[in-house]
Length: 509
Ligand SMILES: [Zn+2]
Image: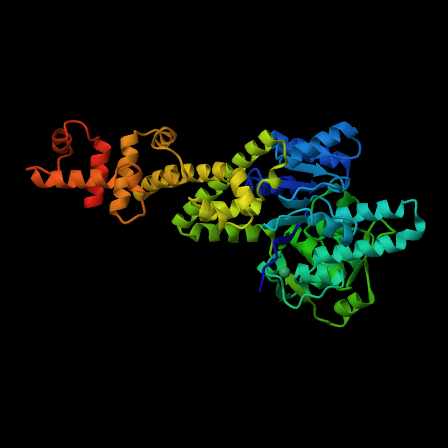
């Protein structure tokens, strides 16, 4: 099964900023968009991220056209990594290497959501998407829709919002739901959404449901979800005492569950039809016909255990710890090289005055960082590198890879040697290689001689002729201490260079 490039994830919208910071820190310098519902939120989020030293800017219709186009350019050219935008952003922007999209607020409908996550990963490399879902957002969106000018459209808009909400609350593969909405049926679960990665666990939720429904009954269906949770958890809030809710039988009956758990359970009860949200009456919770069956006719209720985001984080941390260290190091080195290649691309883009993605896509750079091609032929094997781009930009990228490989693997003895050979094959002179690598030309030759001995194909005759080799090897036969280079050097009276002697010895070894 092909795992789709977009990962889909929905998280409860609590402590969003902290979650975003963590998300972004895991993806240094990657381009991403955070969609916010209001201009103010976009500005606040951008300011908070900028305070953390991240290159983030707000983008919305309230900015001057000049400012907007400047921000767009900076984003396209990778000078800004994060855009905190209202929906105004993204249309008409051709940037293929957006690596992630976050929805700070719930979108109004799945059409908008799908379009916005589609702005990530256009180059075909993997992209992550994260949607924050909160009940407060749903209420706010309902208000916006209901106060909208086009009353005739309200009904449709509300239904669409409901579908959006169902998606966010879904306990089945999210991609299947998303594609089903667009009448495309997926025959398998996607394997790359939070539900697929962490399938729900069902529990007998009858007692939980009874507590919740009984509490709703005892407060006379007069309180919204937040306050009901406070009543269930026995909160000492003044308002609750004033209303006398601290005297009802179910006050504090749900202390054993966290506020977050209650929120999840109550939303499930709403979705299952055991509770209703009266949107027209301050969103208070109301009982339904089904709730009476639970309360009075011992109907059982299956609920999904809210495996909290925290738990998942713990699992991820534990998994990261058990990973072999060498693998982690390899990954780290790969990321470092990827960053360096991006830097090279950025520099070329600036020199040429073109957007970076026109040089190579992130997917291509990722593959380069993974394969570490050391020659033009190997570089051509990376997808996205053709003859034309190889001729235009190949040299700079190869050099960066060669340098990186040379500096990051000092323990692998052959690598520095191979580096010299590769540079030679790419047409650099001995002097140029020596200068680039900060070594003597004789050391470069020693590298070549060594590689020749180990069976590598080295163009030795470029530096020493066959006749000279024969002369040197013949001389070796006359001498008492033939392995001493100095003896050979003296034998030729200084007319045969040490380099040639070394190469000839390698040839004759
Ligand atoms: Zn899935």
